[in-house]
Image 1 (cartoon, rainbow, N blue to C red):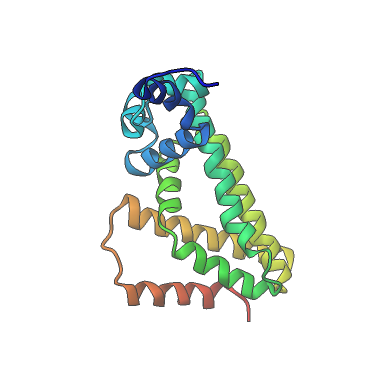
Image 2 (tube, rainbow, N blue to C red; image 1 turned 90 degrees about the vertical axis):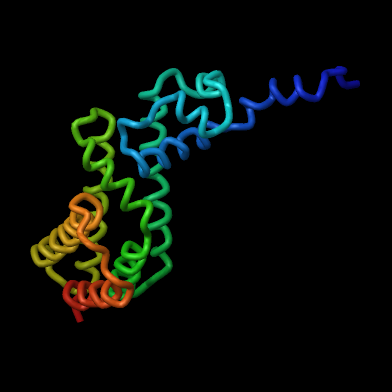
Length: 199
């Protein structure tokens, strides 16, 4: 037997439960990509999601807790979508090539990363960036070692690859240099690949 509740009242009482903590975290990440870390706030996110602030407090005690959840979500997705997708590639040189191509053709993760780099003074941001950067460098070093380079050469090559990535982000997203045409960009990516991946 079900209670006789008006349809509108039922919808209103169930609405906050429809949004999960992951929905809020993803919305916060979207806002970081668009406007930066400082823009993450409860009221604009609630308006964006079409809910009241009560839905937010169902999942999080504070704005800082939401930001922490968003950062952890970004870190986990980055780990799974980038590194997880490459596990099936057995040849280390082919894996490096796939990594460079994958990174080159994703946009939103780079925008989020660039915005997080601007907010390194935030106590929640710096530990996440440190972990992600360390993991990326370790992955590159391991991959270059598997491709036949010695430890020192692999470390140099990994730092060079990561510096090229960060530098390109700086030029494209922060210094707002003119975007390369498609053919120019593809040629640049191939140049990076042929320069950095050992034969």
